[in-house]
Length: 69
Image (cartoon, rainbow, N blue to C red; front, side):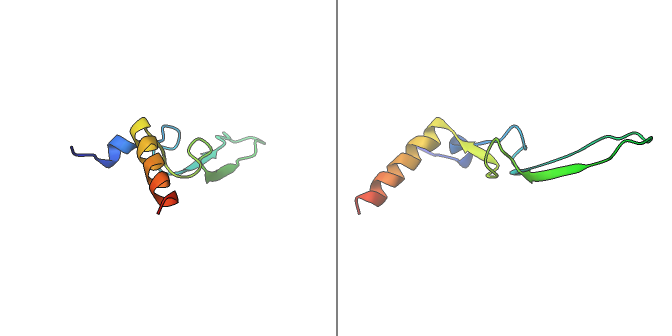
């Protein structure tokens, strides 16, 4: 059986796998204030992805083995 990274980790749809977000206002002249916000993605916690069901299962096995060594 061959397991690939994509089988275990799903790319975050909010940040497209970067782990960060950056948004800015589109002030179009006038008196509007232009601003930019950026920081870690709140959807994935800045990791860029989340574990799939298979990834969660493997993480649980690793935690189990580490506890019982």
